[in-house]
Length: 343
Image 1 (spheres, rainbow, N blue to C red):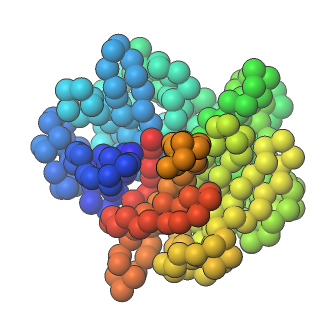
Image 2: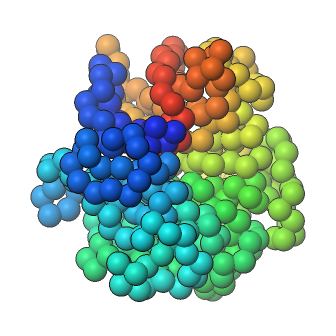
């Protein structure tokens, strides 16, 4: 498992079976410095994705406060800057040469294939794409205006409101979507990756696309449901459900992408550090999650969900990671501000 240890300006690789720390990537100092694991520097890294290309394993990191996308070569144990100058830009079109292209608070990243990454460009309320063949980065969706406005014909006519979390869901040949945690509209939205031309509101938000105050905590269908500033979203393969870190409601929720119904799964809505069942457990601004399929002691398939729980107070062991099994049991991992996870 790979953790964005955001507050420590580094990336950590952990053995999921033993909980052993395998590698620490980054000196811990704030900076935009390439090089070997111990020499490189980040500035509040966020979303991460994994890509296998050219017979090597890579991680791509949203180095948010550096306004850059960084590449970690797991084979060579080196870090380099793919795109971004270290300065925040207001460009809403992109496609400049990598050394001149300024980005704006990239927050999450997902691989569509080995050559194409999709980025939640929170600072300009857009979704961008990165072509790894030429390292050109450009607007994929959104005008740059802040709203929850969908389109049935053109993704660039859409309007986003600080998109912060991304997850690709491949359900069938006919249903492939990128799920987006559109945090400022308190909604989960989806881009149709089959047509590459339409989008829809899945859960939360409001019928008025310019009402960015339609937040709350209500299980229901579509925009009748209410969320509050969700930062993370994760599609669970083989289950065909979407997990949501409903950040300001301190809950983990589940969406059925066929009916757009959303329901609370974990957390009682009060911020805190408490393990237990779905109604008694507590989280504190959970911001990211991922899932892993493995085997239990009887060789049965078991789904493990890992949650980045980010703002526990010092008296509650600072921040931590919770590992919740769908069957039973829990474990606690402690890190400083772990804001994003990747398998």
